[in-house]
Image (tube, rainbow, N blue to C red; front, side):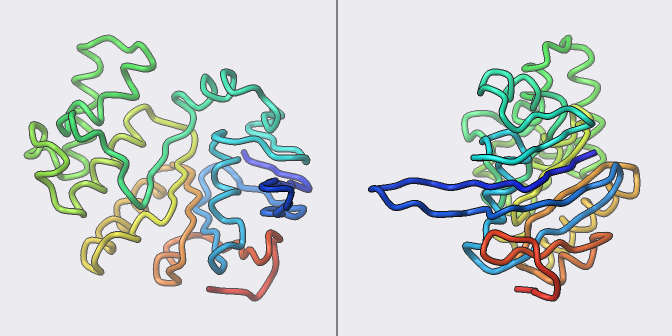
Amino acid sequence: MIKVTNLIKSFLTTEVETLALNGVSMEIKEHEFVAIMGPSGCGKSTLLNILGLLDNPTSGEYYLDGEEVGHLKESARTNLRKGNIGFVFQSFNLIDELNVFENVELPLIYLKIGAKERKKRVNEILQKMNISHRAKHFPQQLSGGQQQRVAIARAVVANPKIILADEPTGNLDSTNGKEVMELLSQLHEEGTTILMVTHSLHDAQYADRIINLFDGKVVSGVIG
């Protein structure tokens, strides 16, 4: 499903070049749950941004379902993200001015799905995430765990090919964090492909396998 070969990403600031990714090569199979681990600054989030088509690599190849997508222009990346990639962030990234239903509905509006079908899908996923009783509430009226449930509902409502999760329990206590990981595990068991960046070895244990990064490279035997 995902294959990257010799992926390099560098950033140039004030004439100083920083190498964030240094020749990353890996594959993610359909229906896998993969955790990416490594110390702060090792390139985890940079890699996730590229795989999520939020950024381009400096060089190297990125194949999504057999299509090379690593060097698409921004407009093409945006179109490809819609309906194909769902995002779950540590900071929830909900829109304060929209209620729960409206936040989850947003990806379906972007896909120009009709109002009747949107309502059906949103109600189904809110029920599945056990948050339907909060449909008319706004993000600031929810607990952190509830906000992350809404974020997961928004990520999966369009039935994407893959979910990319960046520290999905990072802002949660242990109880809410466990509930969120159990939700992601349930989605994986139902066939969703998940790629998760995490510092937590406990969270990583929900994954089928762990990919370790260190200094922008895939390595073995490094956790942290």
